[in-house]
Image (cartoon, rainbow, N blue to C red):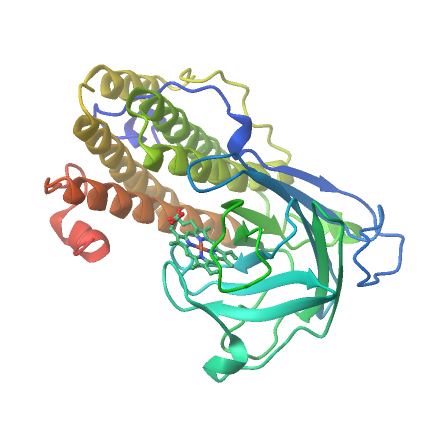
Amino acid sequence: MMRDEIALIVVLLLFSGCIQPEGQQEVTEGVVSEEWRPDGVVGENEYSHTLKLYSPARQGYTGGTMTASWKIDDEHLYMALNGSTPGWLAIGFEPAEWMKDADMVLGFVEGNARVLDEYSTGNYGPHIDDTALGGTDDIMEHGGRSYGTHTVVEFRRKLDTGDRFDKVLRPGKNVSIIWAMSDSMDPSVKHNIAYGEGVIYLGRLENSAQRVSQNLTRNDFEWMLFIWKEEKAARDLYKTLYEMTGMAIFLDLVRSEQSHMDQIGALMKRYGIETPVLERGVFDNQTLQRIHDDLLSKISSDHDALRAAANFEEISIIDLERAMGETSNGEILDVYSGLLAGSRKHLRSYVRALKDRGIEYAPVYLSAGEYEEFVGGA
Ligand code: HEM
């Protein structure tokens, strides 16, 4: 496979970008030696994995951090959410798009801790108790504690609850998540501190030798590295577009692309592959560099910026589809399909933003049929 072909011949895209702390996620792993207790105190050795999520202040949001800690056994997920809020904090598993179809757990501490088993039926809610939708409440144990400026909730649920409003969580898999926090304890009040997306790996540390279930082919290795760089290209590009235009959509998608880099990066790490250290706007792949530079050189309006970003998403979609066509490795396919869903979502967002400005976007690289299937009616 010729990597330089992959990014397509295209010539659009812009970039720039140094890694911004705002979108980055820190994951730590450790051996569990403490008994799990849902008491609102996260012991240093109570969970095997910890993911620190951060979202900066922006219009309508004060900004904040939330730390998700978790471990699994054969049957259960044990989780703690520790957020910089006196109000509710929530995690959503495997949304189909934005909030839609996310299996949510929302907690707050008002005297006692409350932890709700919910499901979001739409892109921007509503999120409803599973029981009100005809499902079941599958939070088996919970607890929490308010510390004034921050709140901790802990809960246990089955990995496979049997409820259609809960996602089946599979050991050894990456699970895409969304998260949000509000300073209110009323779960019907929208988030105003922070929101974001991420990925958690449902691994068991004692099984680390089995964490990579298949050997890597040379082709898989090259594709993973390329896809990571392409996600970086998107992140760098949107960061620069944000600086050029001040449009919030780019800031949102910088964070999303960072999350995509983290997802593929986490998989690479499990295969012992280092992610390259590359400065913002700098690529060791000439095609990506050219696309990035060419796209940036053509921006003279907000419309140009949105079009360039949409062009780049089209390229990403085509590359991801090619990468998926060239591997039979299930765990790599899982990650690619999450990234593909993300790129289609991003393309729809850019097309919608152009439409809001009275501009009809026409696909440049995708076939009319595929474009219509995933973006039609955006
Ligand atoms: C209290 C009920 C909620 C309401 C009314 C609500 C509403 C909305 C709205 C209107 C947006 C669009 C962005 C904005 O206006 O700032 C949004 C985005 C988002 N929400 Fe919620 N939300 C709620 C709860 C939640 C919960 C519990 C989660 C996480 C578990 C969540 C995760 C997200 C995420 C990740 C986005 C970003 C999507 C994007 O970038 O377009 N939301 N929400």
